[in-house]
Image (cartoon, rainbow, N blue to C red; front, top):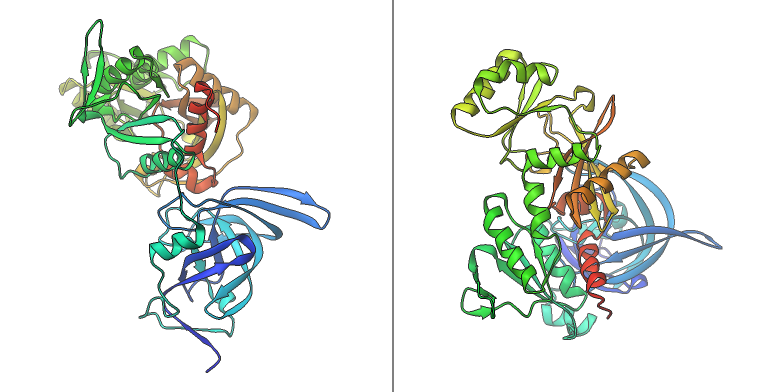
Length: 456
């Protein structure tokens, strides 16, 4: 027992073979396997077998340190997480340095960006070498930010990058933080712009966009609009003003405006011969009966045109329930769509993340038990999915039809083939990055760089 290392619930360790000089690991004797945060994972061949290439950001809450790593692949393993979800992961073997000792351990590679720690040390890796004191932390020594920076070197952001404004409402939202980090990581000056705190000067000779406090934003190279639905009118007006100043917008104001109008967007898709669920729209409650028949009767979906992230979407399972919901919404003078219910989809849909006419990542979203909406914000779960050529073509054409450079295209699999549900101009990154390990935020920044002809 005297030869065993006594550790707390978290410890600083190193993986020298990967160039990871310091990473804080969660020590968890309840977990069987160990895992390491990794994204952009891909395999390649060498003479001695299959290897895996991946990126590691060893410091929690930061992507400023990016390590490109390679390891020999030793296994592919299905891992069940603490919340009951299963995931097939690549397994590698690397040297662990903990305290004064060093030994080989197996690590599964997964996106841990949403976890508290970039590494998990499980009981298989501990073997007979470790004793855990769960009431203690960093028994082998704490490290300050200054010490970590010294290990990885001073991180200086080049000043030769682009000036990019992220137009949104909440700087703490995962998607917004990720886009800011991705831009900074590639050497750009990133500015978070609260849409409500921007205002415009309309003038034939000197038009301007101002930010609260007096800063003039005319010198931006590009803006990324991430406008919440309640701010669509003002946000699109602001985007349009930036465009008039020659500032590139990653999704222009016209594309955002038409994608936010659910009825108009369905009409555009229909006009371009893209398959959508049968839908009905009427102005008067007097037309409720015919509206229900139009979409094949109950069960059916009732959607508020102003709803988002699954809010304002109701499943009416019987004709009477459908009549009640439709008439209730109509009495509130709410605009709504009635849509056929695709029972065979079984609460699942596809989210394809399209950038510049290419699908960069795709997931299958599954609704929570007792729920029919597969949105992540409604408790849905995400998993990697292989989209068919037909689904791929549908998603890409839908984004093009809307005029969106960046789009989250939602598709449902029906007995009639894939159907377009919705096209989102500000798709969330959290679910798709966590499930796929793909750095979607960097792909968005890459799109701006290409359009502006910027090279590092």
